[in-house]
Length: 538
Image 1: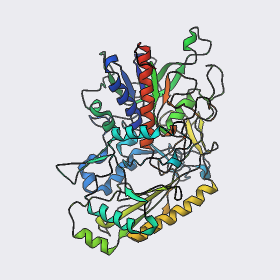
Image 2 (image 1 turned 90 degrees about the horizontal axis):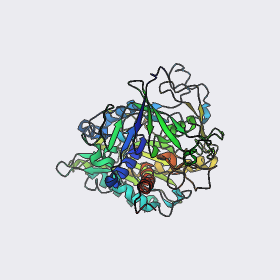
Image 3 (image 1 turned 60 degrees about the vertical axis):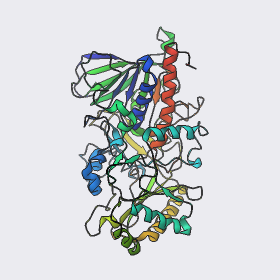
Image 4 (image 1 turned 90 degrees about the vertical axis):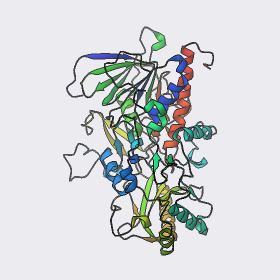
């Protein structure tokens, strides 16, 4: 771990949370709000820095990016750190992985390491998974309830662009087409339009989820604080390992459970031993299984008495992504010119259906892919971006391989190598999805030269799921957590994030992950009450 100081600091708290993205903040909000009478303390850490006085505010709320969203793409580019690069032209890059088979890589898979995580720059798109996208979920029948709760927490709406002329016209043009009849709707978004200034939109971030807890004065960042702070955040702190009691520990009630989590203070070099009643690891679909693997949860040893968890890092599913740009038809352009006010970008969704199992987004987004970069040849008011996401079959063989040596030398964590392939069935549906996107483009206008339909490198969707997947209690060989997101064989360790999702999905996964996290957080609350002798512990 580099040069570390020997001094060890012990922190005692009620709930430890690793990760400050939307899911980590969901755990914090639900637990804090539900345990005021217990005076529960939450101690959160993140490897990234705290960039503002508010926890995890969406960077697109900066008005300069709302006035010209084309330039927000550079903010996202700067926030994304690659996972595994095979390009021989960059052999000295810290992300270069000589062990990676290029044909099995996710070359565009990336991680955001900052307080708030990807929640500081996400699209805010929150479509619900359709029935076919939740077949493997052990709570599929009750999932709509948790998704509803997640919508409330994220403040998801589908009406914030209803008065915007480009949105109205794009949606209307597609709805008139027989090919898209019944498949077009407003894209559900975690956004809120200002009542005072209609051109201004507030994009939801982790701060939205935390509510008042995200505001200065309501959370503590002082590493030397000796007060009984209910919510503490330590930025620039990395989880090193989860330390468990061995199966021969004298106190039988603790055998195999978490003793403490070792956390490295990156600024001081000190190691913190954080002891808690409950532990939550919500570091994303790559870093969460990375920490579990490094802590010995799938090494086949019998030191701790709990079940080995061979599913860690397996069952990886990532969405395919095809994109293009269109200049709108002249008829549409003329109508837009006549109505220059209320001219925000469209936010239209081509819905996932059983016959057409993909998710289409039509807008003019801040983040453009590949050669689809902002230019000044066209008036940007007349440009729309089409992004269609396809499912990837769930397979045990699609996995992350962790190695103790490299390539993640920047963070002193086990290296990650991808071993992922798309099935022939995936490729078949991909071909139909591209045809569908071309049909949508034709309805709306003309595809721009240089922005023709192109398949983005695998991993560009940034929607990896399944690596810490949910299953039933007796499915310890094929899943990592149970229906409450509790790690199999553990009474005090929970997992949050997209990795928990056990299904192949085409929808944006954040809403689903937040829904699962709410259920898990409420289970933690019940367990805390049980420990405190509360009457509603069951």
